[in-house]
Length: 125
Image (cartoon, rainbow, N blue to C red):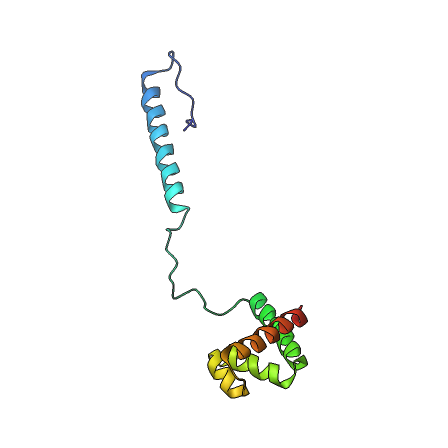
């Protein structure tokens, strides 16, 4: 660190060196006090402070997606809507969906659900 005072010349009186050193030490102490006192101590962020709520952007995007899903779902026929609701919404297996929709096999129910989801996806965009 550069000093704030210049070194005494060789022709300076003998007390000048002592005054120079006193000033240099004093300036270093002041610099250190400014450095330490000028910055607050760092504290780690606590997990309890961080909010778990979605951001306004996430809320808006979620609302738009839900509205698009709801509008697309309304365009499906009753059988397709029921199939999507049971498979995706209620988490039923294809065998359960087949029984609820009175289809002969789980594969038949799977195809209805797959086709309905494909229609749903294209209508949401």
